[in-house]
Image 1 (cartoon, rainbow, N blue to C red):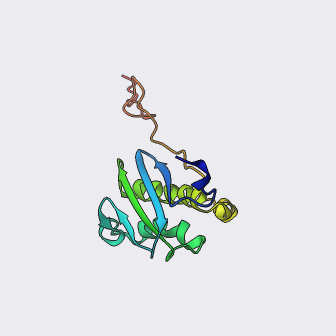
Image 2 (cartoon, rainbow, N blue to C red):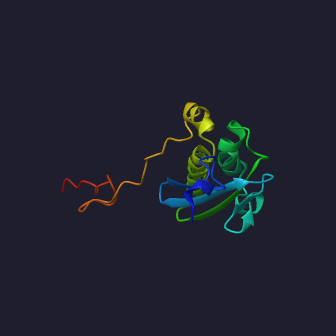
Image 3 (tube, helix red, strand yellow):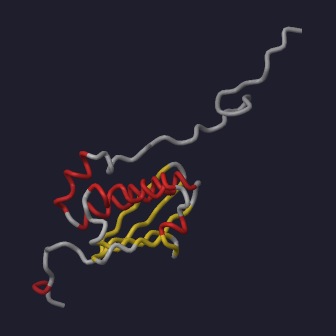
Length: 138
C-alpha cells in the first residue's frame, strides 16, 4: 500500500460522538443530498416533537450544510430530549472533522459545548438527592 495515494483533504466519512444526560449518539456524516437517518428511521418518524427536531438540525442549519451531507445516527439511552441533545453535539463534532473551516461557526454558536448537567445521585439516609425525612418534634 502506497501512502502517496492518500490525500490530506476532507475525509469521505466523518464520525462524531455526542452525549447528553445518559444518552449517547454515534454520528456518521458523508457527502450527499441531506438525508438524515436515526436508528434506521427518518428524522420525522423518530423525533415527533418539533423542538427535538430543531435541536438535531441546528448544527446543519447554522453551517448551511443541510442539503450537502447525509447523516446516519445511532442513539441509545435516556429520553427524547437527551437523545436530541446528544445528536446535536455528535453532528457538530462530526461536521468539525468533515470540514475544518466550519469550526469557528460551530464554536460561536455554542454547538461544540457539552452540557454537563446530570441527575444528582441519591444519598444514604435521605429520600432522594436532597430531600430528607419529615422532622417530628414528638
